Length: 254
Image (cartoon, helix red, strand yellow):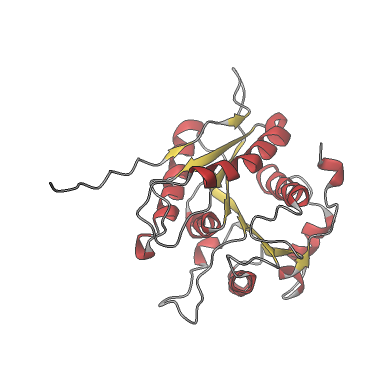
């Protein structure tokens, strides 16, 4: 008997968290993009989706009074799959869906791993004003047929955060991308989380506080913390190898 492939589900937004009560005004949206695989025909990973939820909840909790809503994105599948760039396409669909639901509000794409690559690639969507790429999976330009594009980042605020001991995604490749991005877009910075790995669990509180500071600054024009201001202003390599200090944003943590 011939076997038929199980159809993949459609992309969709996860449950909204944040300013979602009756009469609430939505002033900005963060789309949290889970990790994925370079090549895969499998269904989306529930573990990767679950790993994306703490950041979405932290952003929504702190940003709720400002009208912030966060959604984690359910992909159609877990693979990027070469030229299909499926996760980036799903991120663009998610931004379209935000416009349909909430109207003309600024959107931040916040992705981890392969989701970080999707956030960077989908940054050209008209609703997107900022990108937060955590431990992004970046192809090696020396091996890839074409370098990862950066022109779509022009006009956006871009922050990359990477653990220096990441054994899954190479932090030097994200640095090289940040160098090219900085030439096209001055509003680019990169933080290094020393001695932390791909999930950045060791300094999770600091990473989440940094994410809050960046998102509030980009979506609601709040003043950035001094290290973030310095990172944006400093030329390479200083602004692209900014160390994330232990205890960063301690006053924001609850």
